[in-house]
Length: 342
Image (tube, rainbow, N blue to C red; front, side):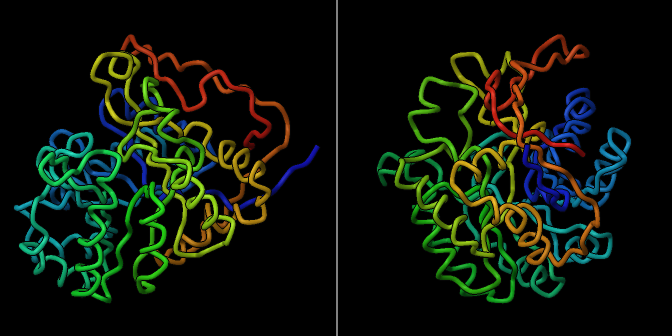
């Protein structure tokens, strides 16, 4: 039996919801092998200011005290330069940008980046990170749909980086060969997160299979191969952000399924399985911990997990008794060859 000791993971893109679902899913993050998480702000109502972010952080700490939470604000018209300064003073790490209508709770997302240039300038000054969901809204006239929405977005990333070369930017949960190539080309202040599920899925795996449906959607085999290849190259501009996005079974198994894959409960086991299959386990530590730490300028947590190479059956579901519903994890019911010991 093989085992590997690794630093506890840095999950630098996660959704932890609110209310009863928050109380249920947050403790599972630690069991999945993560010790520090970058928390997304797209709740209802969204997290738009420092006070709301700190209040949300308190709720998370009550649910699971043994995690470190890095907080973000939702880029919105009410955000001011003064609020950016306040956010930085209070330990807020990043500002999350959602184009309007492209994913869960993005109805208040933006349509024009240039109006936020004063905000970006202050973020650059305060050393905050711009976290971007990089898709364009569907537009029939421009031939934009979910399969090419990420690629159509990329010129926006280039323009922002050109105008603010010192602003640290993360293009979140990338899914396309075009995104990989652009991130590699841009300067050292631009990086990208990659999810476990996007290293495994293609369009065939989510079309008609609601629990694999997320935004941005998994693309073609050539795109998945590009993600896998850049991981195997050990490129430090690409690191872990699970985009674990829990939705109750009743919201996934219907004619208009919510977008999101729930992966945090077994995150490092999934990654060990995938990296082992790709014959690149030696790169897992950097991908899941070191590269993200370095880009976000974080101190090491000095906590470790053990990955054990033995049979592990993923639960078919989690019973969320307080909500009288189930939560379906990624690879539900599947036998994999790795498990996490925290």
